[in-house]
Structure formats: C-alpha cells, structure tokens
Amino acid sequence: MSELINLIRYYYFMAGVLSQQQADPLCANCKAFANTVIRIKEGMFELESVNLAGQRLQADYLRMLEESREKINRVKTPADAVGQKKAGNCRMPEGVCFIKFPKTILDKL
Image 1 (tube, rainbow, N blue to C red):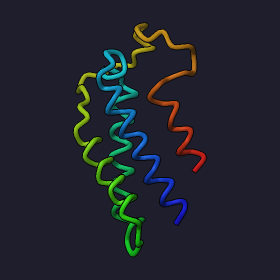
Image 2 (image 1 turned 30 degrees about the horizontal axis):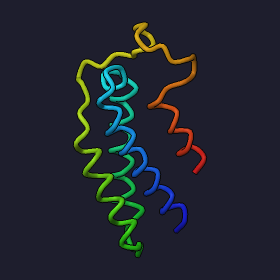
Image 3 (image 1 turned 135 degrees about the vertical axis):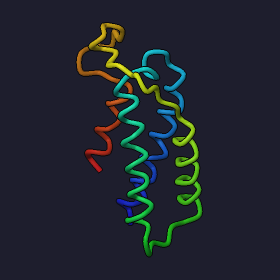
C-alpha cells in the first residue's frame, strides 16, 4: 500500500511540475517535456486501471489522484517540439534538466 501511495504522490508532484513548466518558453517547447507529459499520462492511466483495483485509499489520496489527472490533462504540448539542448537553446549544465531530473524519484520508488 505504501508503494501505491508513493506513486500517487509522485504523479501529484509531476503534474504540478509539468503544469508550471508549460509556462517556461524553453521547457514547454522541448521534446523532453512533450515525452514526459505522455509518459506521465500513460503511467497514471496504468496506475488507475491496474493498481487501484480492489484498493481502499484514503479520501486525501483519491483527491490527489483526481487533481493530478485534471492538471496533467490540461498541459499542452507542441507537436513540433525539439530537444532544446541539442538545438543550443537550453543553457542548463550537461546532465541537468528540470523535466527529466524528477524521473530519478520514480526510478527509486
């Protein structure tokens, strides 16, 4: 059950990050952003369709999940996104990405 709760918290966190970063002119037009939004939507769908079956979650976690779904579904991604680092636009240090970095959290859950 704690793994499920941590996944819900992760998706809640990522929905917030992606929602905010869509206002960033570089992140919002980056391929990493577009790909991450797709992966988060797929992960949330899997979480809801597979992992919630038969689970009894507290109302707070169900609310977090609903808010996450609503928030991530409002995130817009460009069809013609390009890798901003490869294009020479993003000046973050090598190996650092606001969008990709939080995935390391999921990898450790």
